[in-house]
Figure 1 (cartoon, one colour):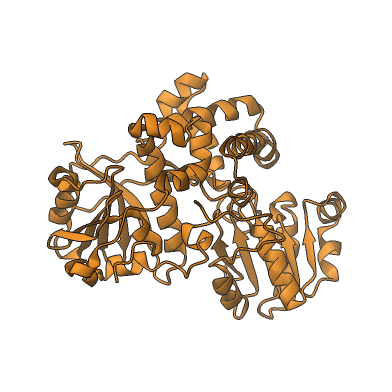
Figure 2 (cartoon, helix red, strand yellow):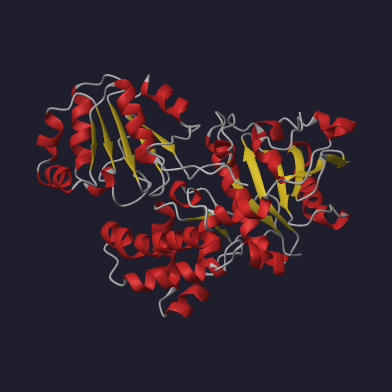
Length: 428
């Protein structure tokens, strides 16, 4: 069974970003913790406030929000240090915050949280460039749910460091409860519910609230019901190439409107459009991005897919599993000191690699994802094509699947169980 958690306030699950937050507070004036609503930001921020003796204020509180909106300078005047939760609800507070830290540039003064990408969207009147470090908190990772250490998979992939895969001791086992993990996702409130139908009811309500309340509040969307419909249509198209004209025709709006609405949902951490991998000199690559939901449990709820449905039709697992792996990689990559970009590969011959990890000065790792338990030669077709295209920059290609062992299939090409991502199936 999954390692269930109770109410996050009373049964805290350690978050791997806490150490990076504390490091940033040591040398930066403002640290911004951003991520979707209900991902655990408030719980973590309150924990840091209590441990450090910082005042904590949330702008979800009506009185505090009105004060911040009506008199942002007065709100900040008496605050030498503080944790300010959900700061996007009073956008004008950003300028007052900037003025405060410019007048007193001590490090570690403010930890702020936001449920939108504060400094990429239209909600911030100033970027606070040079004054803020932004750290992302997505829903629980599998390593966090297991009370484990931060995963090392990304670093090891770039080092091609899976030496034990070449020994008889490299054997593992199929990923325990893989389908249940994928369908549950990582939202703390959702995984605390042991009844699957109750979990999916909460997740669908969550998505509706984002569309009808938060999106309207942030961007003054005039037709919140259309945003709900867009989310439903995107759920059907998850893990596929983005076709904004097609989505627009289904909603009765143009492609530019769909692009604007999708950008808003990206800023709210509901979805992510994964760019196509490219390299100068390669001309036969598809340029369209791929659509991913940032939580596979939310996607499963929107698609009305449960464990029993997948048992009857295994093909229903594919898009969910791809989004699940992408989310685990995104959470792991955010902890790495070296910036890591995630893209996808597809060429005009329809040869694909589900996810491509890249680092400067051009290092590449390919990740292919399969729901089956057997690694077949044809499953490595895309990884081999990517290896040919990148040459010496190719660090390794990994097929993640529901198998029971870590095994090399060719130089720098390996197959391994999915839970190697978070250290479940040891390949060390």
